[in-house]
Amino acid sequence: MKLIILNDYDQVGEWAAKYIRNKIRRFNPGPDRFFILGLPTGGTPLGCYKKLIEFYKKGEISFKYVKTFNMDEYVGIARNHPESYHSFMWNNLFKHIDIKSENTHILDGNAPNLVEECDSFEEKIKAAGGIDLFVGGIGPDGHIAFNEPGSSLLSRTRVKTLAQDTILANARFFDGDLSKVPTMALTVGVATVMDAREVMILITGVHKAFALYKAIEEGVNHMWTVSAFQQHPQTVFVCDEDATLELRVKTVKYFQGMMHVHNKLVDPLPSK
Image (cartoon, rainbow, N blue to C red; front, side, top):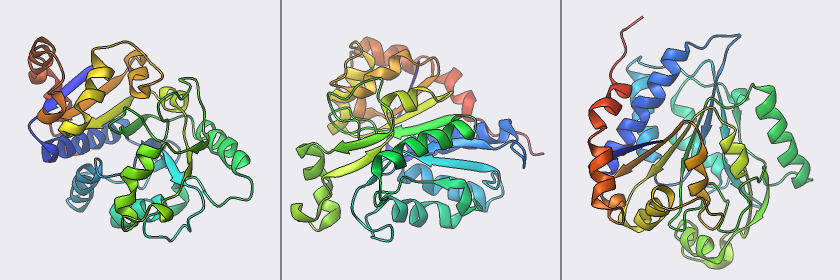
């Protein structure tokens, strides 16, 4: 497990984007060998997405041979609703890069059979060869995707009822009107993300400091689903200084002492 500690939100987004850029470049995808990327929504990855767009426009990266699978989607709101995760991904990333629409996969919260939709999503991931890098964010209660506290750590893509705290947190995206906030979602499971060959979790802000503490310094616990990634062989947590405020000083100093090694992971690669 790696813990990357950076100064602020902007640096987290830039480091993560450079890491994704380098992973795709080193993979050298082509028409018969796609790089498979898992992606989140929410405020945390926005900085990363802006940098990825910037790298694409500079010619440093192409998404022509990248397939994406998103973590989740609300149930019952239209695909073109401004707060749907379809809209989020297209407005904040996909329409600005050279990815083909048929290579983007987002759960359909309006499918006639939601269980079949979830099962089909798992099959599509398998058919693609599994996910090479799954990027995620977390909530203040340590949930990843919509795997709320108490979710099984062996869970797969499924229909999930949202916790009241999550509904309250999302109300800001729906004019503060709780009645407009979806109460159910489709989400990948913890085990779905654990199956990825590599996982990168972005954590920023003091309001997520206790969740990072639970993820790093305490044991695996289904009440803090992000803690499951302690057991993944290739997990990278990327956080800002504010998110470390609940960690022991010794823990912070240990990982800061590794930064000279970890920063080599995002060094610019030679041009082809």
